[in-house]
Image (tube, rainbow, N blue to C red; front, top):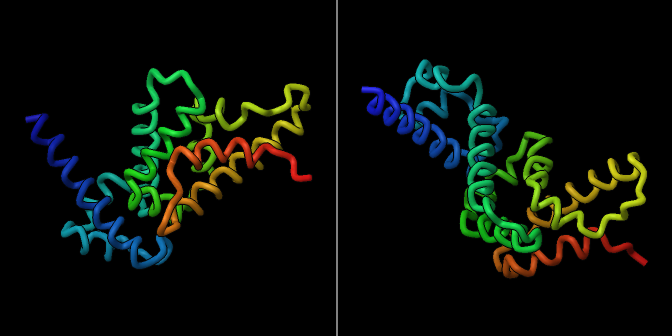
Length: 180
């Protein structure tokens, strides 16, 4: 019986996330109502509210799922450069979802969560000066994380994208290279 309930829950959440994905292709998350979302999913609002309090909570769960998938993919990886490459490959393989989550991002901590995966940090921050003060490191991290996120967003939104390997190698070089 518990397995049946779990399958029902998974199906319900899948219907809601699929409906949200389709709606995000047409409009901003800020313009999506729970009523319209439930109508699109073929569910009633009480079912939605059993699992989520808003459409933003559903989007947050979708982001969390992406981060969990990335953690699974990176498990056992020891090379930071290869790790960043695998992240880019995953994003390209799941292009539609990656575009939706990155372009409709309303969670200001999402770029930080994406780039705080330990090996991703190792790859992105490998050229950081160890003599930096805490203030320099804090602002530098903000610049690197948001700059890397902007590079990923721009790359994902291109119709003709460079290979993931190129983007993975480009991020640490371009973001951390001083402009003359």
